[in-house]
Length: 498
Image (cartoon, rainbow, N blue to C red):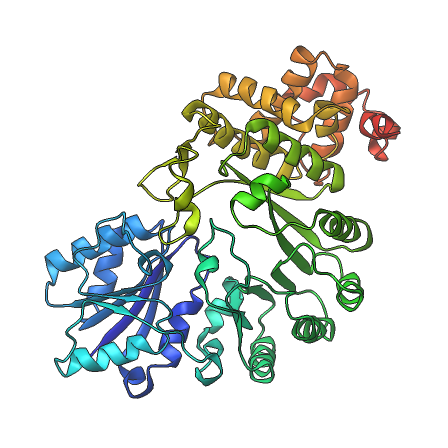
């Protein structure tokens, strides 16, 4: 019996830890099993061709919000060409109902953590005793699982992020998140995990992305993991998702010790409005959040990534704008703006009637409108988020952006800029860096009436930080006056900061 484990990653640089858990726990069938990974950018007929060339009897596919539509197409092709192949689906997108993408062509669906269940199902298929199409799993004991890390290939280590974990689950009950469905936080044997990390390190792994939802929940465990990296010679990169209000002294001391570029922390803020947070069962300790963000901003070199959600039940644009203004005043780090999604199984559905929540049934299941935000509001905010990424989060215009805000509401000023730039481009994609810079320069000098030379000085400081970059044509008339102050990093931006 030939078995293939596959999925469609969001990008080539990503890797599927879930497939490797399944492979690690295939026991007697491991010798008959192989992993083949693809991306959502691949043509599905080509993916099907490569899978079928291996003449599999069973294909297990990991299904996620980012690939479910492509998976449906892939299943359709495979079943048309080779209807006798058994297709087994697993992953978050099929673990809860309703299924909003047609997956009826699949033979079996494993709901829940399938580390052990997939092997058991393959055995049952082999001896013709697999009778149930949908298999609901109980949580496996993590300390009894075979770990997956030796099954990252040398190619993975050289070209992809290595996904790792030391725990599963989340103790919080945020209603928009699938992790709120977990019964509890469960931990792997940390000694065993660190041994596997050391083996990965010795093989050359330097990019580690932890998928734990609450990395700093268990401080003893967190400190041991940070010690692992601090004992190594840079360069390396470690990414963690952390709780915003839990940074005791021991953790702070270790975070401060990381070299520049080595540590990235993702912090889910989502909202700073206590009433809205209460609506979705999210715990907020605003004083601790502010204190910890200030610490990370001022005393560490960690790259910080804060999250806000647009469209939460009861949250107006005014409330969202106040959240954004507050975060920008607290930190100059990246602020990721996401649109609320209704994931199957989550408790966010309980607000549908009260707040007139209307969502798309097409992945990623974004909010379309609610009692506070019209469809047009949501569309404007989607574009707001995109332009925010291109300008603010990209870091390409760090100095120049100060002209846009200049002691006013960041939200209100950027909202106006977003409306203007969309009016000029009728697009949020395929805008080159040079074109984006020219648009920003035009807006600042012609709409906001800022001093053109001062804006040019700051923009040259931003855009010429990479050696060898040519001066854009729209800035050439101002380049001769690009002052020594600007070259030293003290042009209009810093003047305005004082």
